[in-house]
Every structure is written in structure tokens, then in C-alpha cells.
Length: 505
Image 1 (spheres, rainbow, N blue to C red):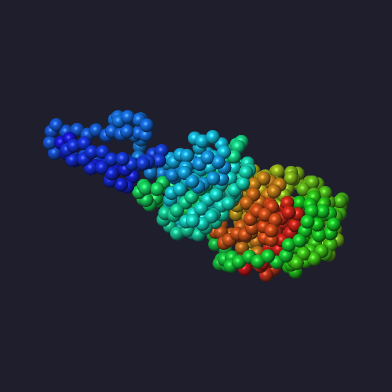
Image 2 (cartoon, rainbow, N blue to C red):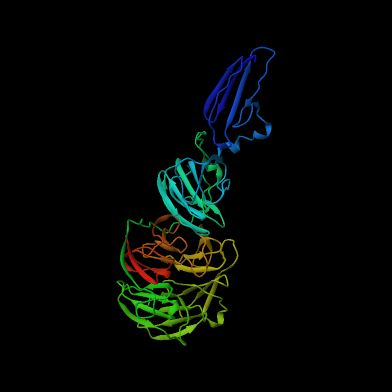
């Protein structure tokens, strides 16, 4: 009374009262809603009362306990809750605005949740999005499915990539719970940024102001190594293998290497041998014995002179073979390695050993002499925590799959820290591996996502391929990767017990 009052709910002016009581009705989802009340008083006595009648209740003054700081109402997504697993249609049992993405359980299992709204993209570029869920989840951006993490399963992380412009984009996140444990997390890796949970303040439910947010901070730049061509396409060249011990069969193949002629060397770990093939999968030879019989060859590398180095994780030694397959020598027993998983070779023929359990990166001469410990245990710059592979480019830069620190670290030829970028987590058996091709493209396997990622030397994603399955070009844990001549890339497909080669254009 004594003036004029305006009530704004969300972005809508829902009520204007001038000197007398006014009321209106709105259907609202549960959760936080932006509210603004302005009043101008022109005479005395004057007063303002804000009242409501909630569903099933009686009219009362809006209790103070239901009024919060406006920040809570601006962020989050609108959640629609359904009875049943993997059910996202029909009439929801409940609708509410959720300021955070979490496996809320207002309904008994099995249940499904569909969150909708907008996501703010602070910088144009290629974004990686991932969901970590128990049970299934699906992510859509601008109507395009980016992550398919469906199925009845425990904690599983899967991700996909999309090119996005700066500004707001439509987002739909679907999650369902069957029984047992429950989890839903939404992750992203912005261009040049960290792999992290999507901050809640980048999410907007329908009906709130779409205010722009500050840009993400830039990660320290790794010096450019020169222009790197994008990935124009990936074509399957050949696929071979099945579970067994006959020539051309495998049991959990791990590492892989290619020589200058395109021959493929496979660490057939479960069969205790290295097999050699043409790029089309034609069997050439099998090597089973070094100083002693090979027990669990985990990785293999080819030096510029054609010599082949085999890492036997069970014996914790490295065996050297001639280009024709004759055993020459072995070394490493005196290096106190513990469960090493990866080998790399530079243009001078020096060997780089990812001493996984020892959390070290070792540099050896072609004869096995220890030249340097380039990285030791830790989470800081130039340190590692259970690294699983290393690769060296034509400029001598060393790329390390630093698995437990969830990063790909870059060192100079002397071990000086140049930079890093985030990668997905993995275990150290089904472990990420690396390769660099002549064009400077860096290939990284992501075993948990069943894909191969392609980067330039600064961590910018150039592309990816793969996906979980048994079909051509799919993987059940892609682990080993090797870059050969003319854009050829070989990948070990561990639990399909096969190797696939690709032409990367």
C-alpha cells in the first residue's frame, strides 16, 4: 500500500501491484528460482508483504528460510526425474532445478534424470566432454550426442569432442540408475585448459539471465615446434588377429612399433613373444628368446638403424635384436627398474624407459648405459607418478604419459620442463602409450575410452578415432600405438586380441 511494487520471477515480470493487493499463479519446478521485488512508495502509511500459497498448503508470508543469496538460483540445470532405468519420456515424477550435477535420489531406484539448460563456452575451440557414471549416462550439446556412456555398469568414464563457438549452447545430460552404487560426473577439457568437473557457474537452467562469464585462464604455452597438419581423415588399412597362440594370433598384445619399411612389431605379451608383420598383417616372424625365453614382452621400439628393443616387464630387462631378428644383447637388470611399461627411441638411437613402478624416466645409450634420470617421483613440473610411456620428436622433445598425475608432460632433451596438458586417468597395465610421426603429430591411446587421440606438440587436439566395440576401427582397450611411414599408424586392440593399422591423412 502507499505505492507501486513489481515482482520479477526469473526473467518474467509476473505481478504489478499499485496501492492494492494483487496475485497471480505460476507452475514452478522445485529448486532455486531468481526473484526480484522492487517497490516505490508515494504516501504514508506504506508497506509491502510478499506471500505465497505452496501446493497443498495455505497462504502465508514467504518464510525467510526459503530465501537465499541470488547466486544459488542463477546456476545449474533443470532436472526432470522419471521412474525406471533409461526412461526419459512421458510425464516426469518430479521436476526441480539442481544447482549441482549429482546422483540425486528423490525417487527409489531404478530411476532416470534428464538435466536440460545452457552451458557457457568461454573460448572458441575444440572441447572434450566426458561423463563418469554408475550406471549409464548420455551427453548432448546443441542436439548432438557427444558422449554415449550407456549401459548397466559400475564407474565408467567416456568422453567425446566437439568444436564450439564462444557463448551459450544447449545442453542435455541424461543419467539412469539401476541398482547398487551410483555416480554421475560431468567433465570437460577446454582448449588449453585443465581436465576438470564442469564448474556449476557455467551452467544455466531455462528462464534465467544468460550473462557472459569471464574467459578461462590460459595454460602456460609450450613453445611451438613448427606447423603441424590437421587430421583430415582416418582410413582402416588392415585388421588381423584373434585369441590364440598360432602365428598371427595374440593373447593381450600390448606394445607395437613400426620400422621405416612399414613392418609392424607386436609385443604379444600373453604368448611371451614378439611377432613381426607387414603393414597389411602378413606374418613374417616370431621371436621368443633373448638371453632367456621372453616372459612378458610389454613394449617394443625400433631405432633409426633398424635395431629392435623389447621391454620384458616380467624380467625387467631390455633385449636388443638385429633388424633381421637375431638376438644381440640385453641390459637393464642393474637399473633397479620396477614394472616398466614403455619404451621410446630418439633419432640418435638413445632409449627412454618409462620405469612405471619406480616413477622414473630413464635415458639409456643404445648399448644400455644409463645416461640420465630425466624425471623422478612427484606431481610438480618435471616429475612423474607411474609413467607408462615416452616418445621423442624430431626436435628432441620428450613426451611422457604421466598416468597417475593425469597429464601428458613435455620435457626438453635435457629433461627441462616445457609444459603439460591433461589426459584421462587409466591403470598402469591397460596403460596409455605414445607415438610421434614425421609430421610432428602426437598419438596417444586412451584405453578407458577405447580411442586414439591426436595432438600437436602444444597439446591442441587435432582429432581422434575409435570407440568401444569389436567392429573395424573399434577397440576393446587401445594400448600400444606406433607411427610409421606415410601416415601409417598401428594400434594394439588388447581384448579383441588383434592389431589394426590405419592411414591418417
